[in-house]
Length: 150
Length: 150
DNA sequence: TCTTGACTTCAAGCCCAGTTGAAGTCGTAT
DNA sequence: ATACGACTTCAACTGGGCTTGAAGTCAAGA
Image: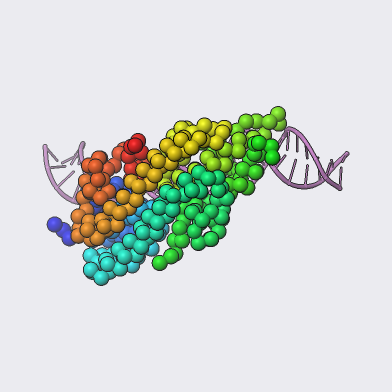
């Protein structure tokens, strides 16, 4: 019980590879102090942050989005009940909109594709708010869903 | 009205770039005949297949998974009501399991991360069937969800 | 002393889902 | 005749999310 965790300990507790943890640190999702030898020492609260990263990725958020959410939490201590509550409410709102999209897609496959309605650019299922469906080039432009909403 | 579509026409009808359509053909998701000059001619039913690809990607399936689903449909004519019904039922089952996972994640963020339960490898939210959570190295091992189920 | 194991950095590589660009071929319109 | 636009192939590049490997540092144990 040292109060901090080595990268190996953190990896063991979270199931996330050390290489991934270094990558997350580089990307600003987690932070570590250094020992005299230059070794990382993570605050114990980091395990919760890593868990959040894993969960959020399952939901479909990019690391950059997750970084933005995590920036609202203190890096070196456990969040208060209030702080955690705020975070998890915005998180739940995002999940809800994701679920709503899936529901649309579920009926869309019969109603929309099945019937031959194929103007995807203006499709109400893919593009409910009449936003421009495609935004600029790049591999992942389909996957965004109003990332700045909420 | 030629009965078939050029790649440009298919792109215009679906909103999917010609480069992506060539990529889909290369990956076996769609098929085209060739004119004497080597130009692609797509059966009209291809537009429906492309729509399916776009929808399925929004849900979160990889092109390889989508290829597997599409392989159950005829490439060069519209699917019968039966064929389409079968496909959309398995599709809906997949969406349902995706939604169920999101519901688990939604409560998991407070119940599981919030309370400090951080044994992600054996976490019931991430890994409900007690499957091994991590399967081999590779960037995307979190994202799979029993791809061969159904 | 020497080896082992955990750590460090840095560069390169991998997979996915495409995009981009160069170089060339058609067919039609002017 | 020639220019234009739509098409072709092929190779190289992008971006996200890491992993892998090489080369080095440090502390503890046989």
